[in-house]
Image (cartoon, rainbow, N blue to C red):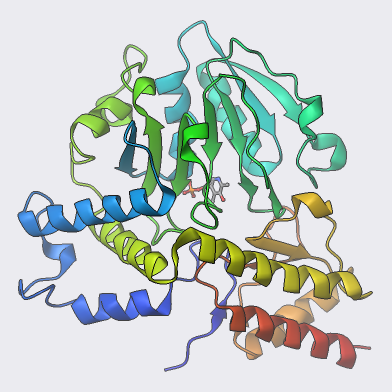
Length: 360
Ligand SMILES: *Cc1c(COP(=O)(O)O)cnc(C)c1O
């Protein structure tokens, strides 16, 4: 068996140790004679798995007791609608920071449901940097302030949590949750699809402060109301049981790695290596403002479509796969989430050097 280095933006690489453990436990979980996939979500074995996953996530992120962790489905994209359904009262308005493609999707979805103000935008910088905090025009009466912590497509990341001045801060953390410690108490709500830095697709995690639950609009369907999840331990209906279990294995693995401080040090080192290499080269180029460069998604250009095509083909022949940039932006993108080993980044840099050297 040979595993490649998978630089996919999502679904993305998982820790090999987690996949091996899942394989070990696949047919017979802890002597139960069945796979986790085959268990009732109401049985004590599965409840134990689910509770341990939540406890480990709480420990990793130091989630305060007055926050609920909801295990949901529908991806971050469903949260684009669920956040306003639950947090934006009729007649109220919400502030959004426009940092690029994912932020825009969140904005457009919220506009279906209510009044949205764009409090800051980096459109004038072609979305290649986080908007300068001093230019934000926030409304102190907004129902919440929404931002996208890491724009996965362009590779633009907030390296500081913005000051919300008492307005609940809502954050799409889909592509950088668990990459470093965050102070959860600064947020009203955090959401993330699992398939980048948590586990397999199909699970969506919402971390929400108690007082923001229970205010869904009238006529909100049951499955879109956070309170229903909070009151039923995310088991009002059948949750994505296997994805939840695998996420739990990833949380355990993260604890074994030394938790989020250790991940932050590793992620920063991996990203710096790659950016430093790109910066010293005349052949590769990253166009994101230095203070906004993502630790998770490193984008780079070769300046010529034929060259980029050749780069991807040769990279794949070296077991370095899924380096194609997003279809909307082009270029290359190396996603180097928690589960991408440093050796994968080293292999990529070695390949990039060689490709540059042998290119005409
Ligand atoms: C991938 C991604 C999404 C969309 O996630 P789905 O789970 O596919 O709905 C939203 N926001 C960000 C920042 C993402 O990276």
